Length: 282
Ligand code: OAD
Image 1 (cartoon, rainbow, N blue to C red):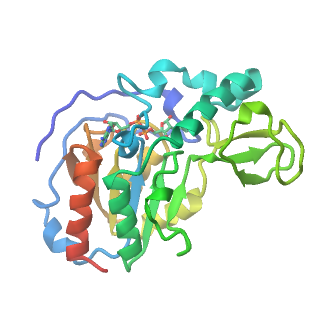
Image 2 (tube, rainbow, N blue to C red; image 1 turned 120 degrees about the vertical axis):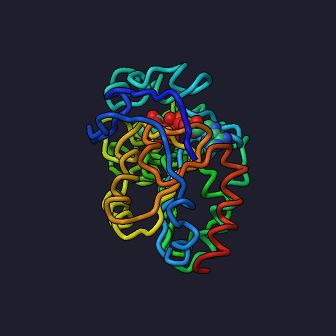
């Protein structure tokens, strides 16, 4: 399958702790089926799945880029950097308080539920890495007791980080009100437990190990504009994995994938999960 799309190259504002970016993105994809995907399915044991804002779009959570994206209405530099928080903590707290309040009004969609089913069923290794700070994967029915195969690399809206005592705690209220840390009992020290630009994403070591071991890497609903997540496809391919992208439009790194399926996550992901369960380990 050949795809065409205009490719946006965003600069350093979309880079977290790494500056790495492919030199010359173009947009096309090759079909895994054409490359023997069907035959290779039986060899798939270890899967890494990366999700982005697109998987939550059908639940009513705004994505970051695009016409109605969050970064159209807010400058990253004003709300998503440690410097912004130092400069204007109230603005930053309000931004995340609004996002946190919104979570109470939205629900997991068919894509979240299908991935939770895959997680519960898949007998091989599986790691679901989400860039999303919403809790829709968590609420979709994962077996979170089962060693936790879900990882929030950019943090979580429902987690607070106390700058006074360094403890993390579950939090679903209004942080701008200056609540007390449940660990050290000081007020005013809590910040959103979100990875801001210039900060290191969570659990990179675990992610890198899983990418090195995986047979299949799947990217869902992400623009591929932010590193290090945007580079996972290259790491997985370097180690021999097959790679599949499911997105509304080709991502910036679309050309790195063996196969790109274009459409809504809520429609594509359940079908893909059934496909892999019917071929693979379960
Ligand atoms: P983006 O907003 O950059 O990209 C969302 C992607 O989802 C786009 O490529 C859309 O085409 C696609 N999309 C939209 N609706 C979809 C649907 N229904 N089904 C499938 N795909 C759909 O969001 P991310 O790639 O997640 O980081 O952004 C990455 C990071 O940039 C975020 O984690 C955040 C942001 O700055 C931090 O805040 C640290």
